Structures are given as C-alpha cells and as structure tokens.
Image (cartoon, rainbow, N blue to C red; front, side):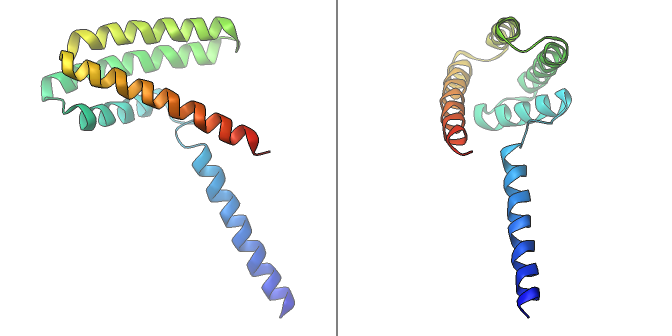
Length: 130
C-alpha cells in the first residue's frame, strides 16, 4: 500500500512539473508563421481591426516574423543580434504606423510597452527561482 501511495504521489509530482515546464515555454517554440498569426489575432482583438487593415497587418507581421527568425537562426547571441532585432522592430513599427489609424497605433504602442514591462517582471521572477 505504501508503494502504491508513493507511485501515485510520484505521478502527480511528475505531471505537475511537466505542466509547469510547458507553461514557461509557451510561445518560445512557435514557427515564424504561427508567431505572426498569434500576434495578428491578438492585434485584431485588441485594436478592432477591419478586414482591410487586418490583411495588411497580417502581411507585415509575417514579413517581420520571418526576418526575425532569420536573424535568430543565423546570428550569434549578443549585442549585434540585439541591434539587428531592434532595427527590424523599428521598421515593422513604421510600417504598422502607415496602416493603423492614429488611435490604433497609439493603443498598439501602449500595449507593447505594457508587454515589455511584464516581460521584465517575468524574467526577474523566474531568475530568482533556481
């Protein structure tokens, strides 16, 4: 009976660890296409995009997701990669500015700032857990 209780406990703990690990890596292993689609869907929901704007945003998100993947796959991690990714992000923001209304663009910029702030909080929190 003790052996059975031990196995059940071990199973529960293992399952919990697996689920926790999957939650921490959510979105990290997405393809460029999936990442662009997920971002477009989020933008459609938050910014209330019409069909024409949605199509343009979809193209822009895919274009720059592919560029970022190319940099990620072919550039050594460090300052050079950071600069290249920032340049891609800046070009993307300029293109989006031309497609979105002023109100949508402002809301998008605020959304980006909030996500960056939350990303920093997650890093600090996960960094303190060994």
